[in-house]
Length: 107
Length: 122
Image (cartoon, rainbow over all chains, first blue to last red; front, side):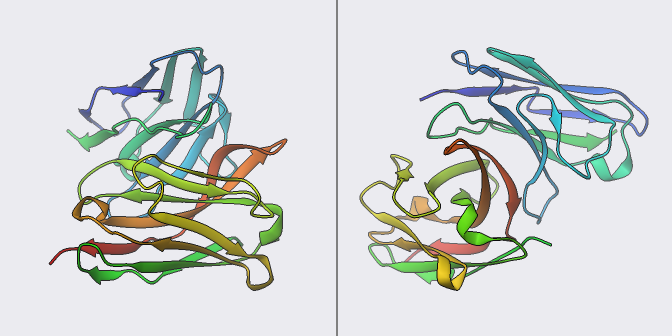
């Protein structure tokens, strides 16, 4: 199975900050990498698919990049509603592994 | 708009069985692959299974293979997960999700239900 490792596991930031979360795959997955946001008590929400494509309705402050084994999710200017847990997920092949999550908290 | 509503969760004893359902609306259900994904309390996300549009192609995570069965009824716009031989480690919120597939290849989960909690405990 492909292993997905996110870093950091948690971070604190302030409204207006620029934040970057990284995701590393244990083998090359091309651009088969997706990002989800989960607010506590809610279902995950798709943010970015195919490494860099913004899902419809998602604010443009979210962006994704990378290919192969190394990927990043960037939030250009944090808003209060962005404090949540973020997961990467590979869609290269089953079992479509998720990263362990990055919890973004208010500083 | 797309709406997915899971039901059927609850408390079950180890070794027991449970059937989850997911009612879909707002899109042509028969055109989409569907999937189950779970999240243990306080933990991350774990993909469980997916099923193709016709039900001919099915995949399971190793952790549930041989114990869980995914199925769908396109006439009823419904997805199911039959769970048997349940273990404490199956305790989780179970989400159904619509799968965006490209050329019959699952890619990403673009819509999720609100989840249903399954608790396996004596």
